[in-house]
Image 1 (tube, rainbow, N blue to C red):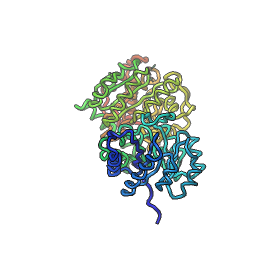
Image 2 (image 1 turned 90 degrees about the vertical axis):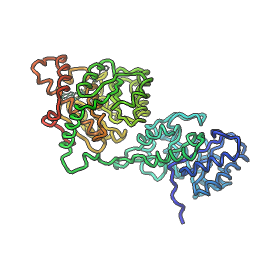
Image 3 (image 1 turned 45 degrees about the vertical axis):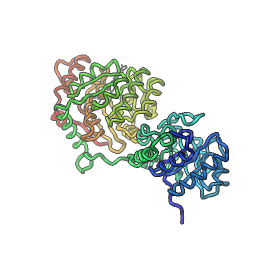
Length: 521
Ligand SMILES: Nc1ncnc2c1ncn2[C@@H]1O[C@H](COP(=O)(O)OP(=O)(O)O)[C@@H](O)[C@H]1O
Ligand SMILES: Cc1ncsc1CCOP(=O)(O)O
């Protein structure tokens, strides 16, 4: 009978030197047994700088335990030990070549290979002898010397994309802890041309189990995080599930959300934004029925995150200190389940902005990314639409719907791309909002204010989901702009700018219903 398929969900790499107490030699085995009981599904025995005798002894005893729980075991690097105890082998790039290891190991034992680059993965796929790859290091870790370059979640995603629908399984390693796992699981699944996603098969954990004094609970918690992960593509949001016209549903919902904002709730919108638009955005926040707090202090971000309705991160006048604050605030918002809106202002303009945005996107899971065509193009690695400073130049994308849909699928966020027509997508459904006024292109900060409006509605995302919130925010600012430009006293950018905030203040659900030009693409 064929052996049951291996679950890679919780792949524990042992490290005896990390154990919280190593005085009692039996402690290692008790610790391992607790981890197995807690939900570990594969064990790799990793012993560095020990005598072969000691390694062999540890491997033998570990194998007896793993067999007791029917959990597959592998040895790191040492084929001789793996052969001696009849178990699998994991090799790194500087260890025995996988093809030789497979020949000596035989066809039935598990064989895994570490990969850090696409070239290394190509080699594994060409050889076709490995059961799985260990992708990493994803983040920094103190448990391994001579680390390869950190890949971040986006580097891991590139490997998964290349792996495609191959039968080779994949686990991620390097800094995988309960704190980093939610982002890793959200950001790494790679969209494939078929519409399916290639996701990780498991998490490879060292210190979060080895250094724990309660390995049973630690493993249980890690396993739960993996088992309860979101599987992509996500189902259609509840409000858009029915057979009704989705554009009509989203407009009706936007009108209802605006009425909620007019109520007592007054959600707090935490902005870490640029100094050019700060005042306009704070006033717009108030006009839409929310409370603004403009704070760039990392020190207070975690406490603020408990009270906010939404966090808005804007790169307009970024500095390293501000990016640090955005990272701290973003992580706190993620942990507290608060929505995060990201406006990558001017990201196409300089390498510095791209690098800062890349780091931020690896550390923080954004709920909505809102940018102009140049900014969304830059994040999509497209050169079809370019930026001049913070502005987008040219006439837009030939196929804007594919641009927003593909970026949304890749990043697992809502993407909202502003312009004469705004396009908003969750990767499955895409809306176009045709409202707005040409005066918006004549003032600085109209994109930032659009993001503020999106953040205001995103604070109610629990009610109808972030896709509807993003459409509602853009619809609200654009209808306000149309009403502002039709005012008799508006005759230039400055009168338009103040009229825009006035109109946002007076805007009602009925204005959205009667003026909306929203369609499904
Ligand atoms: N010519 C236009 N017609 C209608 N709406 C516009 C026009 N230009 C910009 N907008 C609106 O202005 C807001 C900001 O968009 P955009 O100008 O793309 O941002 P940015 O200021 O970041 O470049 C969006 O809500 C968009 O819909
Ligand atoms: C001019 C300028 N410089 C840095 S931020 C900023 C405002 C950007 O405004 P928007 O992108 O919303 O037009």
